[in-house]
Length: 433
Image 1 (tube, rainbow, N blue to C red):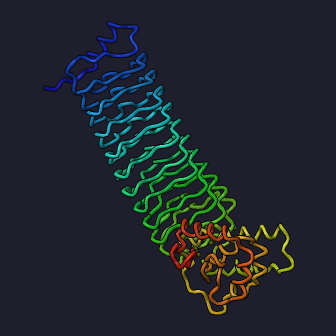
Image 2: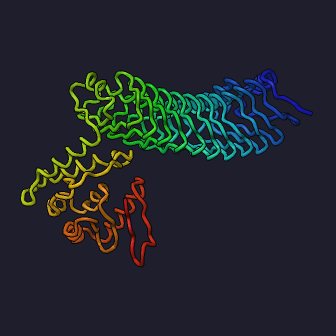
């Protein structure tokens, strides 16, 4: 037999005990009905008894004084808005049997600092954690396949989040206003980033968009004021209106060949963005809209970098221009991440003619990293060996410590530029492009 606890029953009991800050459940309750405790402002703690399997919609909504709650393992269903605006709640443990976080379940729980989502959960509803302004981290289980619109909107203290492999779409405004977010790991299976998904994530400094993403919605990254660089993956076809507008620190953007449509104002207000690297079929559109910026192909940008580095003679490298060269090479990283360095190097490439001393003195121990980026050699414990220029290889070998060689190999793995093989011969750590 099932027995539902009703709002009328709760109101009668609370009136009979005007000083009560908790509630004693009657025996036999199996479910808590719609809005049963809604707006019980003096309720501070509650223990739901064993035997309850269902918590209905809005059950504890607007219980702003509620600080602690115990939910038994038998609960398998928590309704929409069940804890909405419980601003005094600082933590909650959801039972393992729960399979979904409903719409607005924890919306407005501004005091919630931590929450563990059980492994069985497969969906996070619309506004599920909206305005949980004290929430610093959340672990989304691997089984989750969908994250609803506005799910984490306004979680301003959230510092990092990992989107699991099963998620294919990030809903509109999903992480909008998460100003404390500095990094995010997006599942490689995500196909669409919704409108305003990361709008006003002002603390975000970098983001790697996986190759499976085919569209980025309007204002998806608008006003991400600390975002410095971004590479749009091969496979992306469309970029929404104002997708990156007002990213005031953005200095580098790489648009892949697959992009066929860029909506207006995509880069409006990106004052630090001096050049846009894009395929030729987009140049007319970009040149009309961004006349103050240099539009170039990946090959043109590559050649410009070569010429700029060649300006430095081996006997005229001050600390200032050394830093400039380092900055030039750093700006190459998003190109490499987007796999845009895959075109064949022409015979007699300028890279081969660069002075080894010139590069080494300018870049110090990052020389090996530069050479690995342009794909001319292998990195091992004996040094960096250039396939077609032995003298350059010998010069670099003298300037890179074993520790730095191993670190360079680690970096190569982390940004997926090549393969590191720890068993490539005795005491050898080889890295090849």
